[in-house]
Image (cartoon, rainbow, N blue to C red; front, side, top):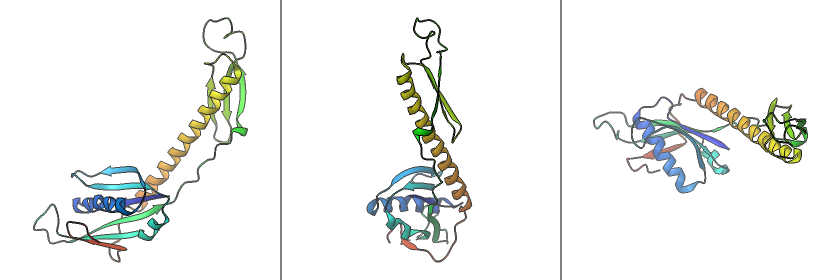
Length: 195
């Protein structure tokens, strides 16, 4: 599961709150940081995307409040700093199926060599579900070139899935950039970010 923590268009104090929240999560939850958008101040994040299989994180979804004096502006009257935490819908990813690969044999486009240009050892592998195509002619046997081409296609499908996921994450993050104030799920207080 992917989760986003966002300051929205928050000021430096909110970005510092996001940074503190990530540190707080690290104490109790298992996750991996997928992406960070840094703010201009030290120890401040505009947004963070994390990946975790911990279902308990779903209980934290919503608006989070950090109630404290501004760490950047000593006489600032505002003390409530809001940011959001929510789960991102995972995009429908394509599952690679090697049985759908179409292989075509071909002669190597390389120059020279007694074996290279006289036999069809090169392989073009096409993956029709996504319209992907790779070529392999480095090996001297067609069998080895098929294996190489199959691995390259699988890697291309993984890159395709990553690209789709990143686009979906960005769209969702953009859609939820405005943070709703009031009715926080969690409240932290003070410069020490205590629950």
